[in-house]
Length: 249
Image (cartoon, rainbow, N blue to C red):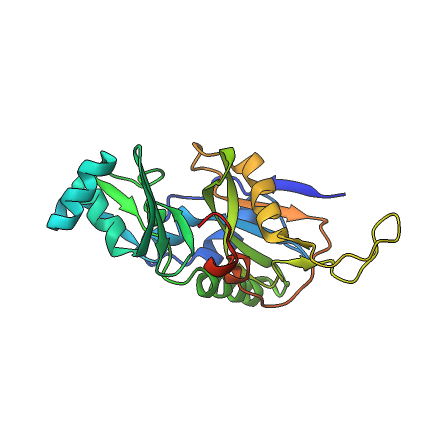
């Protein structure tokens, strides 16, 4: 049986906070003991805040290019400037949307720059510089404190081509192989599968979001227990389809 449990009363995370220590201390207060084989899904917003990846828009001087783009997509020029600084290339824009290839996390809206769950009216959070590295650091901290092997998934909310509604996906992983490969296995009728891969890290991130929610910052850390995952140190970058294989880019 798979169980999904919120770690209650995670405090407001500030720059340089030790997330692993805070998560362990908060879980202990709630009577939750981590076990090897558990999975923790952690909202990107608190990881970014702990790493100081927060920008005050009042300090941003937009370039002429950002001013032009802001008129095209009807967004705050200062916000657009921050998005462009996190962008490798613009994939699509129009009708209020700015879809870009980020420097580190593949294609997403607004380069992952987000106003939600960030204290302060003019502040936005940026994605971690390397979400896999962030996940591995938290994994190591929790293992040092508890002695248990607890997989870490850092999640973020993404839209999807040709589908309404957003879901949570994995942007950083540690202690878990993010893709389950069924190639070479037989289906129910003996057909040998040739290409089937399942993005289990994304599925776990979305499962956690059912409890985490989008508006309740008090639930940014979710424990998943009972899922038999493949242990190891893969990378969330394995979940990003290369542009040459993408029919919609």
